[in-house]
Length: 273
Image 1 (cartoon, rainbow, N blue to C red):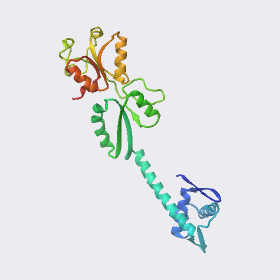
Image 2 (cartoon, rainbow, N blue to C red):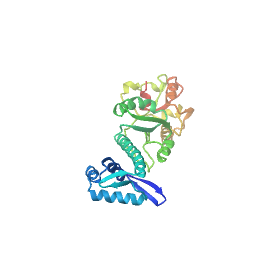
Image 3 (cartoon, rainbow, N blue to C red):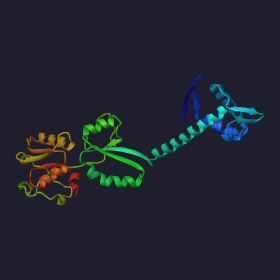
Image 4 (cartoon, one colour):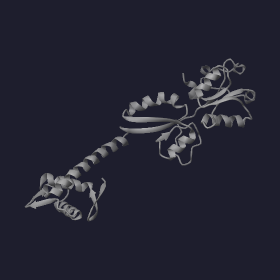
């Protein structure tokens, strides 16, 4: 349980949640012995707590008439606020329990640009079946912006298409994905290559020498696919002729279909209908 700071002219006063319950229970029974029994503490201990509270507050909370404890005006006002504090505490404990058990709450998740459209249709329905009352907010950002949002605690977690993660961030590998070279069926290079469906995940190696004379539609360099593509082309001494750069992988795939050039695409992006 917590403590609630309060101040009066006598200095700083700390109202303990237990003490709030003590006052309300004494008023309920108007008898300190019965109150102590309900609270599972001894009568002398409860009397000691009450005397200390009244001393700290500088006010009497109860008038004693024989063994009967009658709340004073200050005592009644104290109980009004105590009841509100205890109700808020119970509300918070319930909400905290829901948050810890993921029954309720909100998640903010960042995806790489253009990846949410191929991942969310599979992830979100399954998540909502398990956690129907958790609200989810999705962002699509570049790798650098995702890292900055995580460092600034503006999002709960991010999905990266990247093996190298900032050393200050914790990560867990979800899987491995192929990056495919996509060629139009109309292009001469497509002769002898299997169709995507026929390949069934077993793709032939890229002949980098043939690509040296090709025209490319590439992802923007700030995107992970664009950065990986640039690194691969450089490693294999391919100085590409680029018709244009795009942040939209689906647009690049459509242009390839019309034989406007080659492109590289993550396998999950290519799987989209």
